[in-house]
Image (tube, rainbow, N blue to C red; front, side):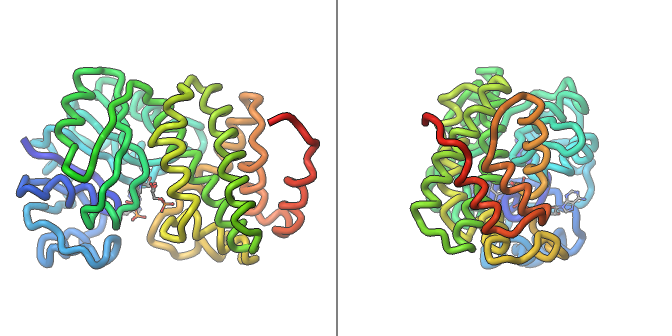
Length: 323
Ligand SMILES: NC(=O)c1ccc[n+]([C@@H]2O[C@H](COP(=O)([O-])OP(=O)(O)OC[C@H]3O[C@@H](n4cnc5c(N)ncnc54)[C@H](O)[C@@H]3O)[C@@H](O)[C@H]2O)c1
Ligand SMILES: O=P(O)(O)OC[C@H](O)CO
């Protein structure tokens, strides 16, 4: 029984470290040869998770065939690469999707992409408030593990749970995915408010109105309200909208300070998923007839269509309406 993790960015590495804390062997697939060498040679991943002494029972590899003897595979690549990654994974292993985003070009959630690429693969979604560096330090958190098969959900939850890493089981896969994808876009909005110096009241208002948008969109896509107000929705929204530890919040902060998205996104090694999800979310919401003015505003700034002050002004001058 060996857990496998596909993707050795910050989150994949933190998950491998957490799963291996009791001396359990964990196999970690990394895209970059230097990352494989650093994990196996130095038990470190300074490129993506600096400052963490990794458990030596993590064995890194760049060869996908090496993952064939794993009894579950955590997929932890950026959302826009998930289709290509899953297509390479060994067949029939349960897949636990940890990426947060919506696929550009198709508007599909990650589970919907897997259903196309690997229709026979049993799958679950793991999502919640989880800054990688905190999880890697062993600080406590709770997460949603969503799976339509109740037996598999219980098996995976027991397999993944650790003393400070506490999964709560749900059967609402779509709901868990929508929370994780939409909160990244809303975190950019809160970062913009921070960068533009709009104050903490503005941030709280954005979290609340953003959550209303997440709920409207989620319900339109078949999510359940209690999932959206749970760990993978509201829980992660509050975390990501509150700290420059979030890549999405930091991106927004730069936008709020007047820098361009092109400049902020150039040459970065880490992923700010909200930048990719925002336009897909906007288009999906429009097609579904769901109003998402905060997400629309984020897109306008990412696309450099107007200065921050104009976009904030337009948001504030929308017609008054009931809450
Ligand atoms: N970092 C966190 O705290 C955290 C927590 C929960 C979920 N997530 C989610 O996990 C996913 C991965 O994020 P991360 O923070 O681990 O990544 P990261 O930003 O730390 O690193 C980027 C990752 O992208 C990979 N990559 C780059 N080009 C690629 C390609 N062409 N094909 C496949 N992979 C490629 C790199 O190898 C690296 O693993 C994202 O969807 C993110 O939203 C992150
Ligand atoms: O750094 P971010 O914005 O990608 O957020 C990381 C996690 O998703 C927080 O749960």
